[in-house]
Length: 321
Image (tube, rainbow, N blue to C red; front, side):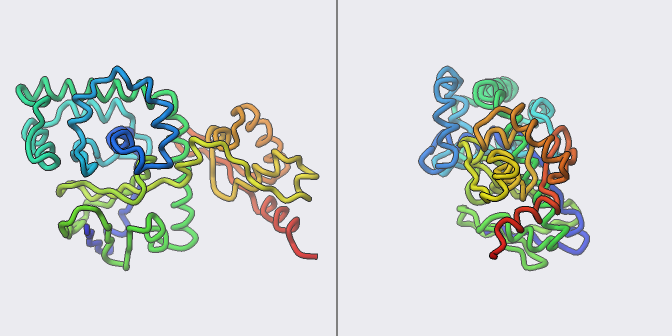
């Protein structure tokens, strides 16, 4: 059990971040034990051929049989817009002592592939991670980021509507917040209690965890939790829509309106419904022109959400006669 103790000022400093490097590191778990990550199986299968010629010796040394990864693969993101090249540049400057210490924390030793010159070992590791990114992430990262950003927006709405406590308790079944202590149930048998002490708590949505994850060591307070819509990234969605509304708007637009109870981007909706982004855009423009959906910019994405008028239309369509 990991416990973060939050004072009043710490509660006010809870923030969100998105980390491409965290996604890379956590994806090694789905690759190592795909049966334990059913929602990610389509991704594992689709990228298998592209991963055939990677530096598996180096990548395998970044994870153990418990599916633990070294903390240097889980940097605390500075913002929701963190870029991989920035994170890799910082990783390239890691002190040899910390590089070895984080590996020992996972394996009990420094794996042979990373023995010898620390500088050469770090360069080989970064090269292996860049190859993994190019093979398995580059093409789909905009879609992944859209899901992660939509999750952050959803959590922000929860805070505004119901308060921070309800949002924190809704992150995962393995996370509990009692107003002062955030408890994270991990597979680590050791109990740890860490005071935030003004350093802030960062919450990181991820596509590659089922429960919750946290750094192994005593680094900056951070919790990685499962993003909403993990499975929707890989599987086309068919959302039921009220027949009366479908008769007015058409089945596609009624389905989109039904799905937009939570914020989503054009890219995310296209993946969920198995259609092209241009087709989704056409329907969203019509729905927005009618006042049934609203849009807002979040970072580099435009997120859409059902308006009060759209919700009233759906509610009226299913109201008992």
